[in-house]
Image (cartoon, rainbow, N blue to C red; front, side):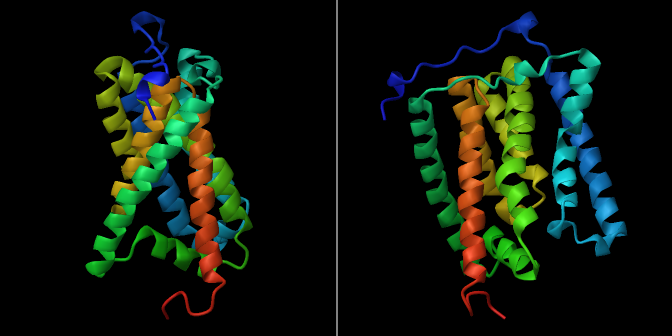
Length: 238
């Protein structure tokens, strides 16, 4: 695809932008506190089986708390997250980049397997094998998580970092934090690549919606494939 056929969205300028890079770093700190609090909660109440009930939705929505607090404090309208229109060329570019990222992730996973390290896919298979019903896990992974994560990491973090550091540094920073927030060392590189693709698509369109759609498709394909694998006898090693 000829990149010149897709118009580059203009970056927001200076004082017209309603939050700063400092606000983004505050948001990252608040997200870390939220994650620690959730980890403590899950540790203290291990019998709740949150993966199998609606509670997992509230756990995911908690990741929006930093943005909610900062927006309320600074009286920022949610329209600045930019739920705006995008064109088909942007989606086409995003799909191409996702496919390329999948190729790199496949090589990464082959290396992990050769080293005897469980991949993220193996970990998800284990989760599915322990669930009585995957419905809430699917709802969160395919619907809630893409929306929540795109709002925080692209709509909020990437925009703020882009204004202060430029779009390339903003892409790297927001993607690094996105990968680190998933708390899975073996999935860090694939998650970073996904975050980079979503940030670039956001940069091209200045809209959160292409990233939400792509994130929905990536998570949906991955979780459906993992669940299908658990239904094939013998596919998961004993």
